[in-house]
Length: 465
Image 1: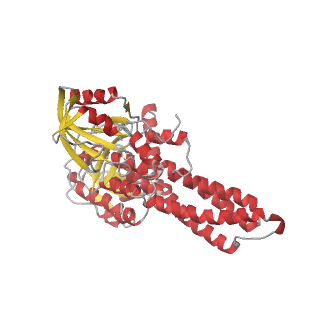
Image 2: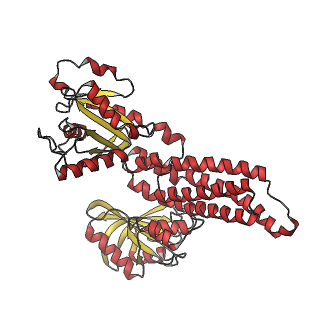
Image 3: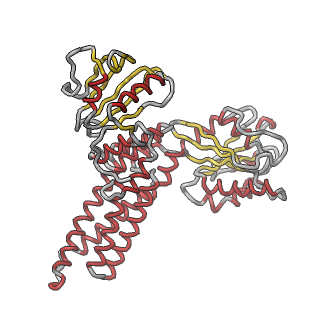
């Protein structure tokens, strides 16, 4: 599909399909108001939507000829001051599927075309209303499922991330232009770009890009839900704990060890953050082929988790048992971006806690009864504390995989420029790597793009957006 500035007019249902109190049908393009004028009968008889001011609402009936269909409100947005940058209107009708379908049929009969996925936002991008990374943030905003993912998408839609990328790119363009100017005077061996200042600039850009690349781990988990692996030996109450946290019977609970043979996942929002809990198979040596596969998957989930809840049975496991188990996790927990919480379960079976467990100092330990749902709120509070809100509000976070990959490629190109600068390679080779960095940064904002990239991005949008 070739993406060019559109000259036709599109329409689509902008609200979810099905029955509701109201539905909104959106139109965009040069024929928006001439077409609506043929089927809309305003209460104010002299109203001509082609001539009224933008950002106005108009009440009337919709239908063809004397066959009236519904009483509607039409919102008017005039180019270029609209979401798409084109003439745009939104028809708010009653939410009957029949009414929705008939209005769309009337519009199509007048020569309009049904919009493709994300075509309204695509037109906004093509008309310069915002750049490509901001357009992608629109989809993230629609899909946000917690206050943190909503805030992250809103931050990117406002252009905070785009401004950083554009600023870095502009500085690189200045030096690239000077380097290329040297090529025009290669015989005179003149240097227009101060190599000392360029080295300083590259260090600054490298630091900025590395910070953005490193932020992807946090940004990605905020967007998709922070993965929390519930692990431990068989029959310590992992599934009971999951059910208590979710407040529903999600996992099968049994006294038989090895009941959980595959990872069970569910998501819950705590303090504005979405946590994706994963109940895993018990860690032990097993001759059962299916259980062994479950245990292998457990280790994979542990490696993917941002937070690990190690559950142990306070009636069966000693301080030494728990410390030995922690030792097996040492390689994973050495990563500072991963957190380990110790959960002593089955406290309902004890009169008092064993004194040995008071010695835990390195890892936070919470004693609970999953069966009675006692102290579960302490786990929720601890999880919330682990994800500091300041990290989201004070820093630009990368949450989009496409942006992350482009940043990595740009960083590799900058490293090549730095290496070349220190080894004294020719200006034409420096220019090649500089242009690679510029290209990959331009991919993020859409200054450099292809039809394949646009198709891949906008095909994921809903039809009416």
